[in-house]
Image (cartoon, rainbow, N blue to C red):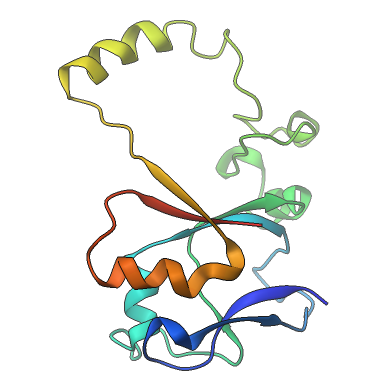
Length: 159
């Protein structure tokens, strides 16, 4: 049985508990993918605290997440989107089979990317955000510094 960081109720970070969850079939407008990484951000924090309970009522069980990356579901994503035009992937070697763009970075896709990007980085016009990687089962520990305002990088939960 798969595991997830389950929100057991509104409140402190401790309301996020790593536990086994049932895996229902995807419903209309949904696809299934095996999540390998998920971002932790301020919207999830506000949902967990209950600040947005009128807009995002909690299902049972509730799992937070608006940013996720994983495997599987590409064929379903193309079908759901009505074609490949609105689907992107960064690493699926089968993306071209489905007509999906951005499947693998190659020099011919943006031959002048480094030359154009480096001056922007050097001048401060472009900033790269630091990341802090944490195990997915530590979702509650990721929420604590976010809530305290002590996070200045992107928090990413990894499988």
